[in-house]
Length: 508
Ligand code: NAD
Image (cartoon, rainbow, N blue to C red; front, side, top):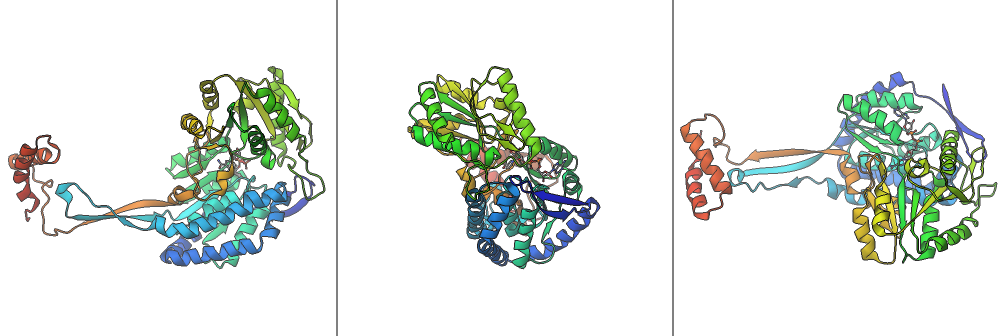
């Protein structure tokens, strides 16, 4: 059986792949487990050397890979650079530079006096075989954001790219093959939901899923049956709040980009806009001026937004617009839908009873509501099942920061949106229905390991005072120890200490 890949703009078939037989997944995972043992026995410096090679292969082939992303996903070549190639190279740099420091074992002194002669430390141990299931909308950046830290930490990887972008998935495989990674350390499996399910059911040690909330829930349920640790990066319904003092041009440019970049098919795209009523009319008229300047896909290399990749998504976008119109919304601009082309659309007079304000639209639709007070704006922004990201537009940074604290989301940007995906240091992840895990940053690396605790006792001859046997004498001692450790009277603490001290140095 084959999966075929299509360019959503030209509608032409650009490649096809043999699907992996789901019955083979466990065998692939087993081989990956063997490979992990060897991979993890290399020093971290050695593993980082392989990643340095992979980075330079990506850099050298950037033009070809950017073109491939544009062909398979539809996004403008500009965005293949700005939102895929550059952030991925930057993630390579971030993890190459920082991982050794983050994963260094460290000592933790135990301060409890009865354990003072213990030496303890923590090491970070890779899970083993990590499964990565990815969506199609950022087919290079999203999987790489998990593959890079997984490999550096010492895991082997079984990667399932989206069935809609298998060619970019294969390109990732070729990068790691060319970098000379030992056999079976990086593995790819092709196919649809069925092969993803087989991966969840296999003996992988941790799963990273990026995709829709709907599938995230199915995966979470299946994983909970066997207590498989999962990281879920799911959908969003990100709000933007525009305050009366905002730099209007910046807010308009930023929100337009944040809503329409990748034709709105971005997890952290702006999907709801709340504007102070004092600037509402000016905001709308500036937004219309700017939206008119955007160019849809044509045969030229330069366009601002593409067709919608999936036909089923066009149906959802259509449904959201129709639902809003049936409940009193108006189209201020756009609204044209033809096959997979959706014209950027501004909706006004929307409210929270409408799907377009509650469910992920994942398309080039900008629904705008006005608000009277900041408290009302915060309440509206938080009135959502999702909590991925949010943005606040204001010249008053301290006010922006105080609002940001009250917004329920995994990240909040002031006078910007989405760009944190390009910074290795930024923590990415959601709350509520937007998911559970964290990617990128130190947190994204720490998701690839578990903490393992060690200690040893320097007094190798000592019998611990808390071991058997319990009698009158030992019970008096444990009571004295409680007073010695936590009492609020200094003199009584010292007296209790004198009773406890001999027990701490008792030989067996
Ligand atoms: P999707 O959930 O349909 O598919 C994602 C991946 O899961 C694909 O590889 C698919 O084959 C696989 N899959 C589908 N059903 C499965 C099952 N039952 N078991 C195992 N695997 C299964 O999502 P999509 O349409 O590819 O991507 C769009 C969605 O992803 C949007 O909701 C978007 O918000 C979300 N997303 C989230 C983030 C984030 O970082 N939070 C980033 C990008 C996209």
